[in-house]
Length: 308
Image (cartoon, rainbow, N blue to C red; front, side):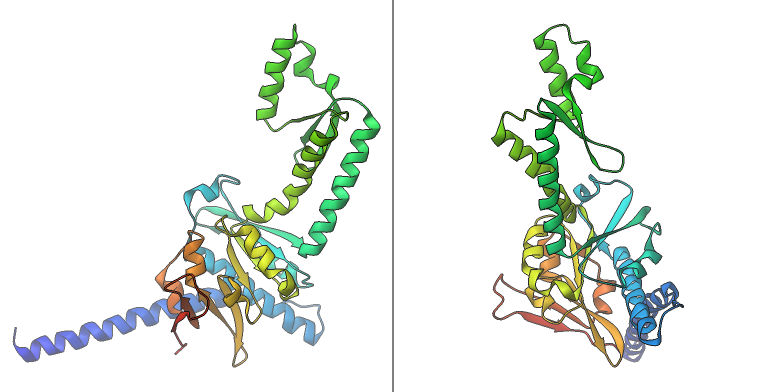
């Protein structure tokens, strides 16, 4: 091959490379646009805001395709990918367009938690209610959950499996087997044990945040951001926010507005620390990608990718 031919070949490869990356970018954007559903029945300002959240929902749906979670993340709810929404968001129902959609052979589930403060108040109310119910029963009982996840309290003697126990040894073995199935045995006389059981059950509502694949943090959670991020830090949860400064605080993806268009930034360091793999196709269309060479937040190294 002559030098001239070699040069021409190099130029063609360069052009093909640019065309390839351009097509990836275009395909990603087209998929997003195709997911947007413009709502009716709202005032002009409400409709505009509703559409904004539908676009963000479409973005998040497409994020799912370009992010890989560790295998153990699927243990809690196999065959499902859960998107949790935390915060005071009147347009949270715009995320309903994603409900039951399929991605990576999994069904998308939307779970709205309200604000973290509301969640904490609910937990405290549940604890007080459970305590009163068990105390009023006045004898040993069993706590279990029905198919809707609601805690049900039953007297110990009402459990069929225990009625036929011939002796105490058999009875204890049956109790241990039932515990493995998720049943909790409570004696109101043992107050400390009772507190532990009630706290554990009530706390499950907050623990549910950890089981999500994605958490969308509304702007109302600015004061609670660090607490939420600390709570889910070791649970491989993709945290997505929409407020300036959230990315620097440790959120993994943050939405921004640029020229009246929604863009997003990626904190790749935070994603990697959570054992999430963000594919290069997603990074290429991000407005900014933050990488840090160390755990220090003082001098982060930033790679910035502008939209063309």
